[in-house]
Structures are given as C-alpha cells and as structure tokens.
Length: 166
Ligand code: URA
Image (cartoon, rainbow, N blue to C red):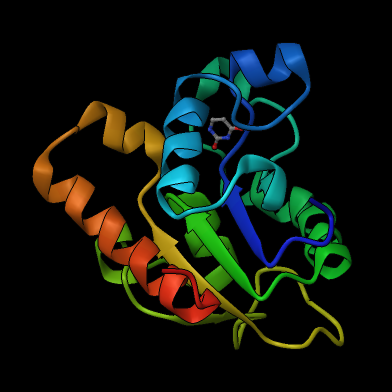
C-alpha cells in the first residue's frame, strides 16, 4: 500500500524475488506474511521494500558501498510512502537506516529515528519517522528457537502498541 502506516525494509531480493520482481515472496516472505497477519494486518495494507534493488552475486550480504549506492532509491520510497513506522529486518537495513555499525542484538527492540544523526547518504528535509529494528525472517528460519521468535514478537508488539493495534 503506497499510503501504508507501516513499512518493512529488508536486505535485498533473493532468487525468487528477482524472478518475480516483488520483494519477500520466497521462504522469508512467507514468514514475513505470517508476522504481518499475527499483527492483525495484511500484506496489502503495509509497504515492503529492500535496501538493495538487485540481488548481490551469490546472494551474499550487501557491501556498505552497495547499500550506499541504492540508498537514494530507498529514501525516495520512504519519502513517498511517508509511513508512521518503519520496521527494519536484519542488519543491513538496520545499520543503514540508523546510520550505525551496531550489532543486530544492540539495535533491536529499541525505538530509533530516521533520518539518523549521521546518515551514510545525506537525507534532505524529511520529517523524523520512528524505526524499530528487528531480526530478518531468514535469520529466524535458520535459528527457529522460542527465544528468537519471542524477541521478534516483542519488537512487533511495540510497533502494534504505537500503531494502536490490539
Ligand atoms: N530477503 C530480503 O531481505 N528481501 C527480500 O525481498 C527477500 C528476502
């Protein structure tokens, strides 16, 4: 939804996303869909984007340089959608939006704000947007423990509270 109150930002398209041309349609996307439904929302009512717009060779983690090159496109998406809240999924999106090199564990579960004090790429004239960093669904699929699922659910509950969802 280009007028969504909530925006999710992942890392980069995978093979399925590259083939179909939509973000989060593979295994990670199926888990993200479940998370969205658990929040009482639908995929059609949120906006989903990625830091990178093309798949890195061999599906590797994007480099800082790649994130920097794609950032203006992502920032423009954020400017157009103007969501109330952004949930970053995983380290790449969290670090880019928070302008930090902190670990995932240090970023998650705490409200932050975009634009950050020192962005990797300058952001002009954008009103601050609340950001909640959490783990990437692909990480959850790899480490599907009660502890990790509990952490993600706790992060999403903070988002639900702020959006007034029950
Ligand atoms: N992982 C991502 O970060 N984005 C996608 O679109 C799919 C998998």
